[in-house]
Amino acid sequence: MKYLVTGAAGFIGSRVAELLAHNGHHVVGIDNINDYYDVSLKLARLEKIKSYNFKFIKLDLSKSDLLNDLFNEHKFDRVIHLGAQAGVRYSIENPMAYADSNLIGHLNILEACRNNNIQHLVYASSSSVYGLNSKTPFETSDSVDHPVSLYAATKKSNELMSHSYSHLYGTPTTGLRFFTVYGPWGRPDMAPFIFTKKILDGETIDINNNGDMWRDFTYIDDIVEGVVRIADVIPTRNEEWTVESGTPATSSAPYAVYNIGHGSPINLMEFIHEIESALGIEAKKNFREMQPGDVYQTYADTSDLFEATGYKPQVGVREGVQKFVQWYKEFYSK
Image (cartoon, rainbow, N blue to C red; front, side, top):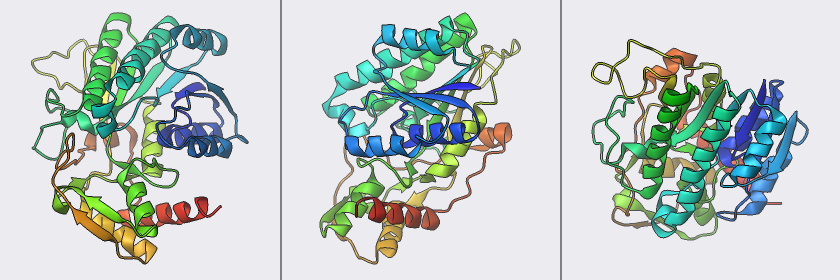
């Protein structure tokens, strides 16, 4: 197969591109290499996959003409769209960045897929779409109409836009609602990275909601395996499906949405304890109130994904944290 992977310099995108190329597929990766976080980390991720069957092109998703030229030149079979402006809190301060990347960028990908008869578009949604939902575990049959951040709203919008293209043009689309992903080569704006850096530097870590928070922490290798497997599960039309009797995660159109996570939430204090244990250092802690855009708990029901792919996470939080800390110390000791 010939794959396009967007966000190929990102945490998840780089690992997906690496696995696909390692498995013998032809992979073109694109990314705009913005400075939302350390550019050198993004370039180092790309450097890792140079030896594989992989070509990188710097390209911004908001540039529809350049994107269309790319599709016309390479004749992709499938697209794994992981490029987006990430970050919940950043969306509160810089909303327009999310309009360009997450809304216009996603629409440009949909148009390119439609015009080039792409077999399957797999794209990144987010667990943040569950917003004010309090029932757990989160199921794809739940309502997701009450996001608590603009980032979450853009991801919900991506699902709606994708459904319209699946319905109108028959473009097969699959959305993946990612639950807190962590591991080596992770993002500096996420808690595991922030905590590890501050603990090593002797700084105080901020702990939201006084530590009473739960996250469905999912190790990067488990996430990547699930993404690559679902690319082979192409949704088809189901003429018997109706809004009244069907789940929002499927449709009469070739459309699907899945949760992708570990399926067992971890208390934030337990996660911090594992970082402390891996580092051999006790953190200095500042307990504070819940922050804007935060949610109390994320917890994925991944039964649909397991049924479709056989995907089941293998890495527990202790092993995952140890691997992350080992990578962090090695990478930043250079």
